[in-house]
Image 1 (spheres, rainbow, N blue to C red):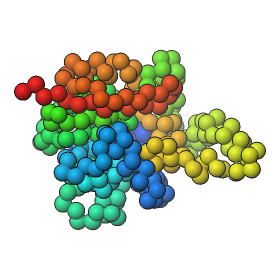
Image 2 (image 1 turned 90 degrees about the horizontal axis):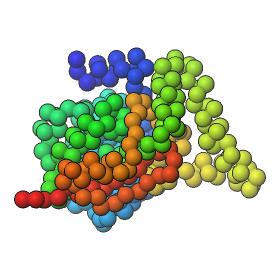
Image 3 (image 1 turned 45 degrees about the horizontal axis):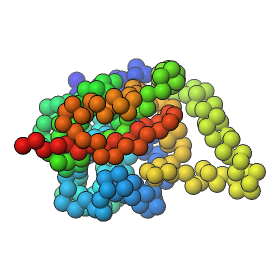
Image 4 (image 1 turned 120 degrees about the vertical axis):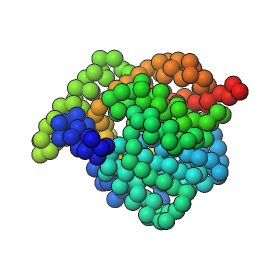
Length: 279
C-alpha cells in the first residue's frame, strides 16, 4: 500500500486528522507579515542571520510556511509530508514564491520510513515542528529525525508537552473529534473555541477594540487563530513527552542541547540540538 492510500484509509477510519486540509485554508490568509514572522522565528531559534549555503530538511512541512522561510533565508530546502494535501500546500507556496526553483524539493514521505530518510543524505538543519508526536510512533520518529543531521548540524524540533492526566483528556477529545462525521465535528470545535477565545473576545469588546486579539493573532510563528485551534482540537494521533525525556533521549545519541523553550500548559516544547562531532 502506498503512502496516499494508507493515509486516506487512516482518515476514513477516524485514526488521523486531515492536517493538510486545514493548512490549505491557512494559505488563504498567508501574507508577507506572517512570512516575515516565520523567518524571524527561525533566525532566533537557530541564532543565525541567514541560511545561505545550508541544507535544510523539513520533516512534515505542513503548510510549507517554514520551508518557504528557510528558502527565503537562502537554504537549499527539502520538504516532505505524509499528508498528500500538505504536500500540495507546500508545492503551492513554492509555485507562488519560487516557481521552477532547483533549490527547493518537495516530496511525499514518512518520518517513520528509515529507507526514505537514508536516501536523502545529510543536512545542516533538520526541522520538524509539531509533527513527530502525530506519527503514532513518537520515539521511533524522534530516532529517525536524528539520522539525517550532519555532524555539527542542528536538529530543531517541537514536541507536545506531557501534562499527565490533562494530556490524556486532550487525546480522548482528539480521538472523538476524528471519529465524528464531518457535519458533527462542530460539537467539539465550537465549545473549545468558546472556552479558548470567549474571554479574550469579551475583553476586547469591553476595551472598545472588537476582535483585536483575533485580528492580531500570530505569535512567534505567523499562524492564524482558527487554523491553530482546529490543528489542536483535531491533531491525532497524539503523543507527548516531558522536556527531560527528550533531552535525555538525544543526549544518549550524541546531541547537545543548545536552546529550549518550554510551555507550562498544553502546547509544544521547542528544542534545538547540535549533533556533536566525535570524529
